[in-house]
Length: 431
Image 1 (tube, rainbow, N blue to C red):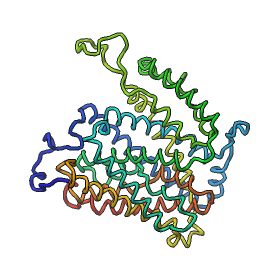
Image 2 (image 1 turned 90 degrees about the vertical axis):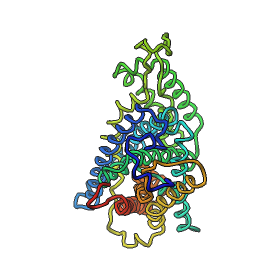
Image 3 (image 1 turned 120 degrees about the vertical axis):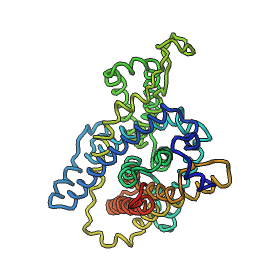
């Protein structure tokens, strides 16, 4: 945190001191992050509408039709893919979302803010605090009960939701704080992926998993060997990489590992930047030395599929929770643990770890970031939807427990938005 509040208010936005967290981030990287923030905001709005429609239908006279649609089964039984539409949304369509998350993670670790210790340490530690604290709160509330398996539900931040809400309630908040939230949420997703892979996988079947890994290797070989081809020809990836990706997804699904992990594995094989072969990359006069930013290119090309189709469809089905029969909701330890974890655990964990790190080390945040805004962003990180809903589904086989968990995620997210607004919205003056 800033140790000289008076001087920080006088620091112009264009000053080189404006961003400690972005100190070594290139102009190209900054432009990319701004574009990503805009995309996430649009995606968040779409997800809000889709979730609202699903929730309304589940509690309307059309509820029977809605649940019948969600439980309709399609797919080949022989391949163990005779899934409901709701399962296709969570296991299949979310693999597209996780593919895009994987691309962004790799870019951040290779070229972005997470590629350097100086720019990565604050959001990484803050994200860890924002995961551990909600989990501990949930475990404390559910201690000694079989419902402790849901400890990971309140740990995930929904990037699209959080960025969309931030843009709506505090449109003039400093860019560095927006990027802090975005980077924190990216690290949060990385932790969530690890949690799903290690804690929500039962009975791994080695043969399908080995087959998937072999095809992932082939995918990596093609993506690296023909990076320029995939970069310049839009149809190439659909013709060659997509069929491999579908088979990898099916094999991962059959292995017992959650199928969405297939998207992450494939994304991690896509090269971030590849130089055209046969040219001198140190010759500034040679225009052909421009690298192929394949991960960024794939993110730009396939992002609309995730933002406009995959995540909204998942939200439409995931938010379909009937409120009737939930009279004991606010006394249920699952609901209490999740809501306290999101509303209190997230901001407490993020703010305290950030303050401790900046006080006892040389790490710094942007000088313009005030404590009030940091608390607001920490509260906004309590908006959990996509991954939180998925973990809720994985945590409980009992339908009533799963519905309680999903309803708690929605309620906790709404309360988190209200808390964030208290700290971020300033009537009568700029945010």
